[in-house]
Length: 49
Image (cartoon, rainbow, N blue to C red):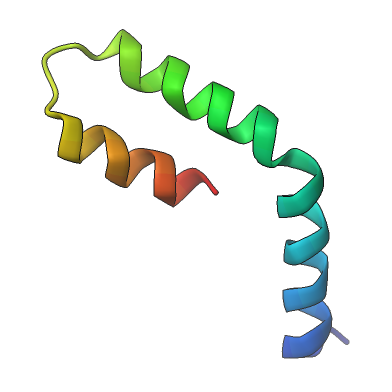
């Protein structure tokens, strides 16, 4: 059984460990889609974190 607190803690650990890789991946994905606006790219970056 997963409580909300346990899920939040797990996400916090994953985010702190993987944030650099996630940001790099998100920026690389954003760069590949040059037709999209900067705002769209920023939303995608946030959604991946």
